[in-house]
Structure formats: C-alpha cells, structure tokens
Length: 390
Image (cartoon, rainbow, N blue to C red; front, side, top):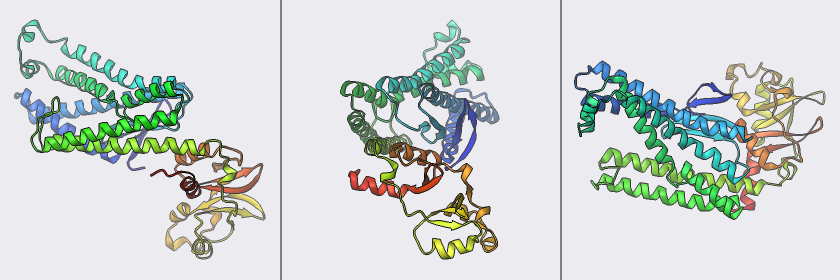
C-alpha cells in the first residue's frame, strides 16, 4: 500500500495515502490565503496556524464520514478491510458487497447524514457569536471578519461538511448517491449485476459531465456554483477522471464476483504443487527452482511434513550476500501462519481473501494435506475464458 498506517479505530485500520499529504498542503495553503483576506489583522503565523487546524479538522470530518459507512457495514456483517484517506477524500475498503438492497442503502446513507450533522453542529457553534448587528451586514466576508479564530474555523467547517454531503449525493456510482441509486435499482430488479451495470453507466455519464465542465472552465466558461479558472477546471477534470475510473472498476468487481460465485476452488486451483526441502539455501532455490519455472511460491517440506510456504516476496527480503547461507526454513511463512482455503470453498470468497491479504496465492488444504495452490494468475485466466470484461 502506498502510504502509511495511522492507527486503528473500532478495530478498523486507518491508512494515509501519500497523495493525502499533497491535498492537505493545498487545502492549508488555500485556507491561509482566505483567512488572510478576511482577517487582515492576523499575522502570517496566525493565518497558517488557523489554516492547518481547519484542514486537520476537515479531514477528521471526512474520516468520521467513512467511519460511519464502515461501522454500519460491520454491524450488518460486512467486513471492512480499512479506511484510506487520499487526494480525493476518503474511502472505506469494504471487502464484499452488502447482502441486500436495504443493507446497501443503510451502509451508504449514513455517510452523507454524518456530514450533514457535523455541518449543522459546526454552523450552530460558529454562528453563536454572531450578533444581530452583525446579521445586518450583507457581505459574508464582512461578517466573518468580525468573528474570532474559533468561530471562523467552525463556520468554514460547517459549510464544507454540508458541501461534502451534497457532493456525495450526486447520483454517480460509486459515490454515495450512485450507491443509493444502485440499491433502489437492485430492489426493483432483484439483480445486483444489472443494477450495478446501470448505476455504473450513470456514474460514467456524471464523470464525463464533470470532465467537460472542467475543460470549459479552462477556457473561461463560468459554471454555476463552480466558477471558472484554470485551477478549478483542472481539479474538476481530475475528479471526473477518478469517478469514471472508479465506476468502471466497481462494475468489473461485481462481474468478477458474479462469475466466480458457485465455482469451487478445486475447479481453478493449480494441482502440480511445487515443493522444496526446508534445508535448501535461498540461493539454491533461486538457481534451481525459480529460474527454471514460472512458479512464485513453493510448499516447504521436511521429511514429507509440510512446514510452510516460501514465496518470491520472502526471498527478496534476504540480502543477496546472505542467500548462500540462509536456509529456506528461516525465511518461509510457517504453516500455522498461512492463510489457506478448502477445495470445496467458493472461488469468489477465496478471491476476496487473496485481495484482503494482498497475496498472490493461497494453499488449498484438504484435511492436513496440500492438494493445490489457488493462484491469482489462474483466477485471472479463468475469468478471461469465462467472460469478456473489457
């Protein structure tokens, strides 16, 4: 994963993508400039201090939005891998689709509702210090200039959270609004695949509208509520491009799950399981096994007893100068730590496990015996034969 782990909240891992640092800096810079124009009496240090505080609180609000999705998903039995904050906000990595249209609706709607509630609370707290005399001032910036630092931040946070809630309700899948549309279509058609296809088309249409609007703004066209200008136009184009890509990928994910559903692992698994002895050196493994085949993982045996699994990723962790002396048993993943799958399990569930663990293969175990490997490339080959995902 690109980025770093921030911590855990309610058992959910929180990750920060490196792109988040860029947008955090841009938001802080923009706010420092805005606060400087409104509060000309503030020093540069005060402007940047307030800007950084407001930007941090904004992204905590985004995190609250995603946590709301994740907690409701967990409450309905849908596992959540993590939450990632990145350039375009945040995303809850829910490992599988909800089991019903109602589940999808509940998991989705709670996000925008959280943003609206936060927005309302911040606005109430921020406007509490506005007097009737201030209310007679028609210019919003003039009103804000009369407020203290905390009230200024709170009013901005209230406004931006409401905008986030409204933006997410745009009916463009996989935004929250698009997922709400999908839940409705799913309930009407009783067909998740068809509902996702229609919602994806709608999402792509919205994406292209945003891209076209952004391109128009580059040439000075004034778009209602969005304005004009090069920076705003480029940003809208990026958002449209991201939404278009996400809509296509989300649809493909559902198609993949649909194809793999009811297909047993044993029908796809690789049965010619490559094995190596635990006392071989890492260098011997490279020279005599890896370089002589296209296998990326090997079952490690000791007198016919399985000890674990060694992969190319394990080998890469060993310094080149140590590979001749280092034994495979010292770098392998022990069998008690291995993630395994049974031959009768559904391939769709096994594929989710591969993605959740971010690994390339799963040992297929029948009782205490290894009967095969379920490799990511074998699943992809199966999908290519079964359906044209293009």
